[in-house]
Amino acid sequence: MLACAAALAVAACSGGPPPAAPPSWPDTNLHYTPNGNFSSSGQYMPGTAGFNLADVKAYNKGGLDSLPDGVRGLVWLGDCRGVTASFRATVRAYKGDPKLFGFYIMDEPVPSTCPPAHLLAENNWIHKHIPGAVTFAILTNLGGEKEPTFAGSYTPADSGLDLIGLDPYPVRSELHRPDYVEISQYVRMAEAQGWPQSSIVPVYQTFGGGNYPDDANGHWVMPTAAQERQLLAEWAAVVPNPKFDYAYSWGSQKDDTALSQSPALRAVFTAKNK
Image (cartoon, rainbow, N blue to C red; front, side, top):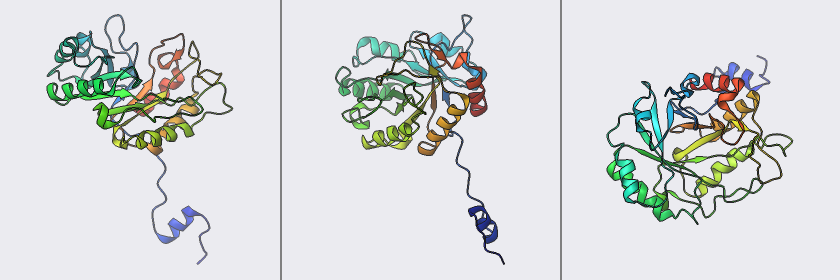
């Protein structure tokens, strides 16, 4: 019998299954994309691309309650003042709401201006008074694009957060090709801070251009569909089963091009999310 020369042939000759193909994207049932989620008439717009975790501002409880069946809300707080009377009143309004998924406490806080003790107090209060609500923030890169670091950033113990987002954006104008390695680098650095893989939420780059310069003499560039698929595959290799995933951003914020304006990327996410 002729010897098998290739890996697939070896598997076939030995009777074993062929090697499993790597996943195309992280496997999760919850998909979030922020900014501009609601039309002027209150319709949840990202649902057309299979997103089912809505960006709800704290003042818009009516928006949460009006979400279609199968869609839940991540309520944006943006508050790091500790458990103030205002914080308690805002959060308490969502107690018992069946459409609530959790609270987006802060976006890229920095320990020097958002003390870990404040985050810990807020998270503990939410966990005590809003049972089942998940707490989330994006971890800040305390270095630069060329030398990112989370050293000195928050930990699970000092912040109380359930989930943290990591947002490497590898498609930039100063690079000859996207820096996909940055994705696994961010994950390793977060794990070094004590964050388990189960707490990590992948944040996908779905924006570019506009008034968004990076700190490496360039600017972020909107990924092509092929680049987005590669980005998703890189994330799948390091965080295969996140609690939810996050595409930044559905709506434009600083004259950039965002997901809602890109039919090519919406097609990628429609296929992935559905």
